Length: 553
Image (cartoon, rainbow, N blue to C red; front, side, top):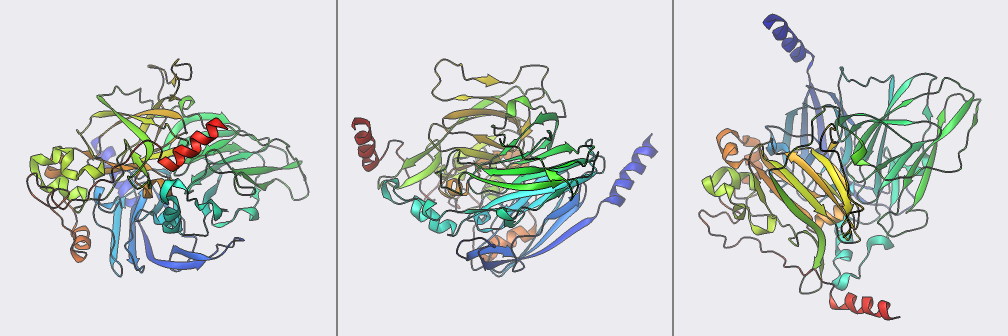
């Protein structure tokens, strides 16, 4: 038996390989083929879109990065847990320092998970400017084999930059809006109106991978007269769940299996619908419909269905394939996803009215260099809204969204069970839905959509050492402060984690401190640390007057 196990282990090593990507991150001025003005985006090797990255489970992904921008950059492999390689998670001033302009850096980590992921910029939300692409990790032993695959990566492209958008959103009294410069939709890097056909062969099974690289809106996918079977959510395999439509929030991924019909007598249509669920309706933009053909035969007529299905994604009705039961929480964190206003009536996003700001020392170095003080959340600075978590502690997160703004919340380094939803203003409990306490394996994912006026409860086991971000994946919201840190097992980090010299070098060439607390000091001295933008939850006077006027008219 020992010989067999050793042989299989060596066979796995023989099949694993290096997957090397050489990326020169550059500016690219383009309109992406859309009917809107060109702007300066961020691409790779002077091109947009970025190449899709494909590998197999067990491979080592090597991203050789050259930063040819005039500002810092970084890359985050979204959904990859980075177990043992927290310093490659790509969040500046959390897991290390950003990549300096004109310098080189290499991310290198083993792909221990199969599934559908994506890679995007995490410095200054450069995802918004085009620095994003799918990452597909295949498994030769996938329990859901398919004959062929299709990929739909959907993104929005705005004619103004993220910084221009944020300036509008931060106008006093909340008067600014970027919607005067509406975006368009791209599917697999091309104008969504130029949808390409899917070619189906009778009797075959197709896996369709859906990746939401959106900065803001929701979108849906459906195929007329074909049932979709959900088999993967955010990289986690699920028990098959039949649906007519899949709704996606920013950062989410879903794989569905589709069984082709046995006849070639008719062709059909697939639909991608961009929703106006929580954004300002703009004719032709929110909502908008993009239809493509599902071709069985070039000679067949197309069976047109008049009604396109639409429905929310039901996390609570889907079970994970691994049969893990509902976790029992050791403690619960209440997270109020709300916005507030500064004393000058400048709006800002927050979690519990704390609007995130970076510390002067990357949090990973504070965890590794402050000894016993690393277990005190204050060490990382109040403006980071840090929670220190024991290794293997089961944490329950209650996401509470009392405003008209929805939030797709993403946790780095872990997946969580989705266990309960409801409305925040429901005093009766009638809207409360919860997974069964036994005999059910709750869906696990890394990004959950929290609709406006609702709450969502998730649980996860903190079994991955490191500093991990928890934030809204709407680029505007994160840019305005909806972000916090979870530091898992700082004592164990100090015992086992060794940061590579290449990570240290990026800090050194930028004169960024690598020891001490949030201000770079020993003991409990925080002089010079970034200060909080103190927020008021109430409406500023101008908006309060408008609201009062509306209520009396």
